[in-house]
Each structure stands twice: as C-alpha cells, then as structure tokens.
Image (tube, rainbow, N blue to C red):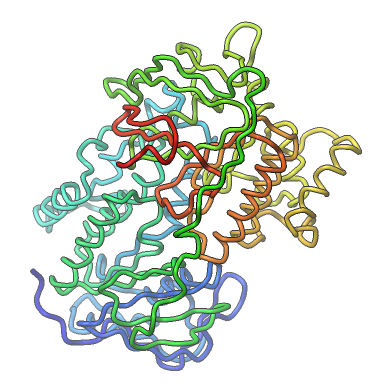
Length: 511
C-alpha cells in the first residue's frame, strides 16, 4: 500500500486549454482531492477524453494554471505547466489507445490470417518494461526499479486474468480483451493517479464486476482514480462528478441524483417472425476453429433461418468474433468447415465477395478502419461493393439508394462531410446505412453501441429495429449488455470458451 496522500491530485485555476479544434474548457476551476472518487460524465463527443488529457498535462495550457500538488514533493517533479511529470506518476487508459490498437491492424480482417500474424507483436512483448514505460530504445538501460516493475507486472497480469493471452498476437484480441490489457498496462506503472476513459467498454459482466472491485482496491490503496463515461449509471463508489457539455465544465462537485435510467431496460420482446423461405441464412455443422494449440470454437452447430433476429452473447474471449469472422468470409478456416451463408459454402464456385454481397455489417473495427476523408455519402455507396471506399463510378440507381438511406436516418445534412468529422453516433448510423444499402439477407451488428451515451444508443437502436424490420432481413446482434438487445430479437446464441451453450428462443435461456 502506498503512503497516504493528503495533497490534491489536480488543481485547475481559471485554466483554458487548446484542443485539436480550438480552445476548450475555458476558465475552468477544479480541485480533485484524496478520498474523493471522481467521474467525468457527459454525452458522447462532449469532450470527456479531452478533459482527461488536460488533467494529465497533455493539452497546451493557454491561460490560468494547472497543478498536480501530490507530485510537488517528488524530486523528479517539474512544473506541469510545461508538460513534464515524473514518469509513471499519472497513467491513462483511453479509448484513443484502444482505437490505435485497432488501427495497428493493417487491414481489419488481419486477426484471422495466421500467415500474417505469426510475426506480429504478442501481448507478452506489449507488457515488457520498455514498452509499458515507453522508454527511448536508444537510451542507456538501467536495472533500477526492475524488480518493482516485475512485481507490478505480475500483479496486474493476475488481477486482469491475462495469463492465457500472453502468447497471443495483439491483433488477435477482442475489444474486451484489448480493454483489459490497456487497464492492466496503465496500472503496471504504479501511478498515483489513474485516468480511465469508458472503463467498462466492451467488458462482459464478470470483468465489469471484477473492475469495480479493482477500483475499490485502488481507492483503499490511496491511488486517485478519475473515470470518464457516457453511460447513465455511475459506479456506486463515485462521490464527485464533473459534468461536461460541448467541451465545457458545467458542474463539478458532489454527486447529484443519478442520470436517467436506461429506458430500454424493461423493453418487451416483440415477435416479428415470418415464414422461413429459401435456405437457412447461416448453417454451422460441427464447426471447429483453432489458433495454434488454442481451440476458439469447439464443434459448434446451429442454424439461423430467413428473417430471424438473434443476439450473440458470451464472455470476453468466448469465440463471438471468431464465429462472426466465419460468417463474414473473413476467416480462412471457413474453407475447412461446414459454414453455409444463404445456402452458399466458400470454395470452388463461391468466392468471398459472393458471400459478402448477401451481408451487411457494422462494428467498431469498421468504424476505426474506414477512410477518414471519405464523405458520408461515399461511405454508404461503398456498401454495394463491401469495400472501404468507392473505387468505381456508382450507377444512378445506387446513388439514389444511398441518398435515400441517409435521408431515412435523418443524415441528409451530413452527406458531404468527411466520415472522421462526424459525431460518433452519426458515424454508426452512416455505417448502418452502408450495411443495408444493398438490401442484404443478413445484418450483422457487432457491438454497435460501443462508446455511445444513452441518447445515442437509443437513437441507434431505434434505427436498427426499424431498418431490420423494413428490410425483412435476418439479424445477428452482438453485445455484452442485455439492455441493448433490440426488442425484435427472439433468439439467442450463447458462447462460453468456444462452446455453444444455447441456440434457441430467448425466453428459454436462464443463464
């Protein structure tokens, strides 16, 4: 346990910072003190992540003062106005880092292509001291602190249950596994102050509960923690809140009443079933997938019929992404298994693009990898070719369908804006329009609400339900949060450690 800290962690005095697009948090005053547990709350894209960067001294201070009094007795300390802090004193785990790891995959299907990933960085290497402390590789190395770091490293590997991941390539990790890795890596620095952006993003129920316990342990150990979240329900231990709107602090003080509860929590399941016509949309028969000695899917069998809406659930690392990669024709092991999509099996006479033409897809990976300079309209048009960008002249009919898709989702006003300049919820809606512009037989939505606030989730989920019903398409919806499952979903696929635990009516699952 570290010595008790009595000095404030962060003090802002009439501070104004410069962000990527201009001045932010003008004339802000704030004092984060030991014993207090702070959360930064606000809508998606309100500036929560920017405020974390400001608190860490990573934004330019234009006016006023930024201080970190808890560090001022550290002999390595230099006034944080100049952005120089003792190494490891403040650690950050952010969605920006998460996105950077996704972008480290040269193409979004890379994690499934073993011939490309054998030489990729492994989790073990990402957690080496030089990587965690971001040391200059050309600097003279020293052994000071090596034993302390080794202890901290093993402590966090155990605490975040990372041992089974150590020899896996970084590119092969799921969103939830990446998030656990970033949290563990930050804590290996033994920081006095931990800043966490969207702490529960992508985590299953077990890992969410474990993280709450970890945060409680950090508080007892005298480590300051500031969480930033767009979700309506803050952890029970939070005592103080900073409310952020449009890159301004509008409130900072003791926690007030909870924000509005999730309005979908008690939503009823509504039946929309229609008579099955044609071959099954998805058919798995005794499907097994291995990555080296690790079995990712173990003899999985199920069938999805036309028009059915399913949710795909299971803990982090249970095999959900592997299962989707087979359906999406992204995983070469689909050739070695009985995997049929809309009656077609990958192989002679049926190529990858014939499968993809029948599918629509939305995911955080697609959001991260989509060309940032492409217009929203071009992003939708690219759905006709399942490509990342438009590489041939679209037909008038295709242009009309893309314009109609944006208009239907109330996005006509952003059609010419660059994809990267759109608000997060608008990007997901554009990707939904892209996924459905060619009237697919099956819509695959892989954690589409990741990182969205409650209004954004409600807006996106309403659009998903309306779109899927109007298409008369099948749907697979992936989430760790049961309250996100659309009301049209009547069936569940539940995976655990690569095994299929349930494939059938939603009402029959009591796990």
